[in-house]
Image (cartoon, rainbow, N blue to C red):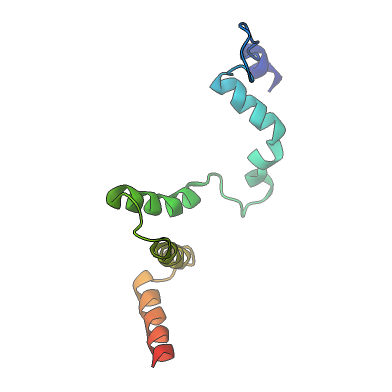
Length: 115
């Protein structure tokens, strides 16, 4: 860590400007890792923690695609409904269950409750 900070030192403010001086991406990464090294390496100590966060990024990606395709959700209620459905599908996949069967079971329960 210290060797990396020697190679990528903190930028000093040359001209009188407001705020902090812009730092390099490498320097920012090193500082974040130094402050949160336990979080960065948690997957080593706890095998339940995944190495990366691709799964959570995939969960959010579908909502962003929907937003880009249609421009926005038509209503806040529609956005909430979309998120609930996507969450149900994502949880079903994570549990190793059939998405189709889970949706059918959910709809059957809904129909029984509605009748």
